[in-house]
Each structure stands twice: as C-alpha cells, then as structure tokens.
Image 1: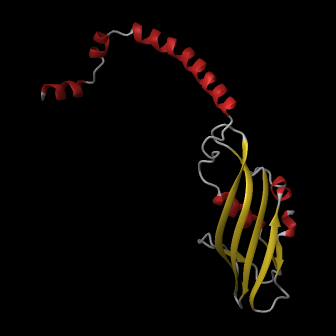
Image 2 (image 1 turned 180 degrees about the horizontal axis):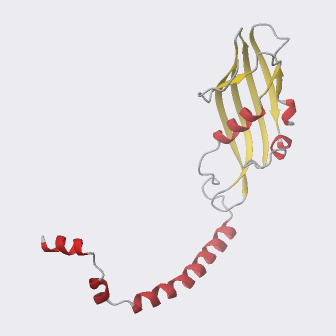
Image 3 (image 1 turned 180 degrees about the vertical axis):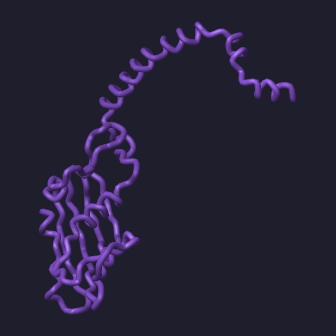
Length: 185
C-alpha cells in the first residue's frame, strides 16, 4: 500500500463513528527514506469519529514485521501490535500535545501514513533480538573473533604505556588539595 492510499476523505461523511481498514505491506515501508522495518504484513483498523469541531481516530495496528536482529544482524519476523488515539482539531497554529494535530478548517481529507508509521515503530521493542537460540551462530562467532583480534591489538599498547609510568611521578602530580585531605586520615 502506498502512502497516498492512507488518506481518509471525511468531507462527505456524516457526524458519528465510521470504521476503516487498511492492509500495510512492504511497499509502504519501501517508499520511506529510512525505515527499520524491512518487510511487513500489517492490518490497521481505524475507528473514526467525526464531530463538529474535531476528528477522533482510534488506531489498532497488528501483524508481522521483518526487522534486523541487534545481536546477529540477520533479519527476523516479529509479531507486533499497538493502539493509539489521535485527535485532529480544526483551527490554526500547532498543538503542544503530540496526540492533537491541528488541521485547517477547509481541509477535506487527512493522511494517516505518518501516524501509522510511528505506531509501527513504537510497537517494536527497544532491543530487537531473535527468540533465544535462533540467532545466526556463525555471525556471532565471526563477531567474537573480530572483537578478540581488536582487543589483542589494543592491549599491547596499553601494556607499553603502563610499563613506562612510574608511581613516583604520579605522587608528584597530585593536586595540593588532595594532599591536605590525605593529612586528615
């Protein structure tokens, strides 16, 4: 589904509640400049309530999204779901509340692609890893080997710098205020 297909034309709707359903797939996320979601099979149900001075939208998002594992960098599929309420108020200016979006009074439709994207991203956990035991072990081993080689290259430099330092030099560089504190022991 493209971003333009996520528009709700409300000018011809009567006041009251209306239900909309959208299926979100890979195409939606491919259109975005940057997206953490690689593939998706999501359903979004929107309970849309038209009032005289505002529109109240209750989103219910659920489905599967393919994302990258933070541990092994392989893609994996994750079940996600999220609910949110947004209010579109007619008027001018901007709202301080992130759940209230101000739209011009002569507006006839709203684009819900940004709220749908945000709902999807907020449904993802902060740490995204495969279920236990499903990470790509070959990749984990390769990363462990790289980290061991990198730390071996760093350690000799640290040992050389430690060997050159003498404790007596450290004593001379102590701030005089600390010397006064040592006398209090």
